[in-house]
Length: 109
Image (tube, rainbow, N blue to C red; front, side):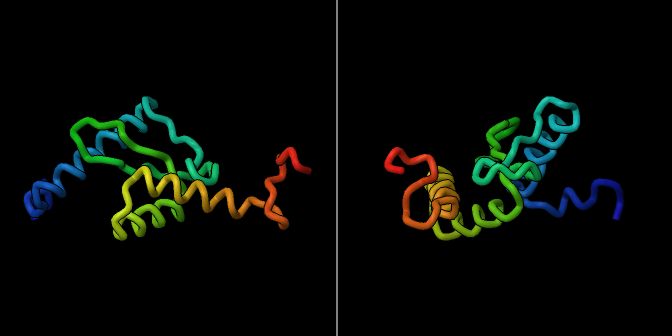
């Protein structure tokens, strides 16, 4: 296949997503967009999750690979991005809750 031939095999939607992914990757490579710890669990090893694929968008969040997979699974169930973040944050807090149900920093202790 001649140079760039694979690009012609993509749909317009796939081309748009590839272009936006490349835009973020270029900004990261140039030091204009650092990776942050996972929004959900704080893991420092993250990937970018695109909240939309508008041209030149910086609308991405940093999540670890397991939470990225969770994000896509919940998206398939019809949840919005905001609902998914709230759900995953709540799940993360529940896992950190000690036996007895009170958070470790609760004033009742």
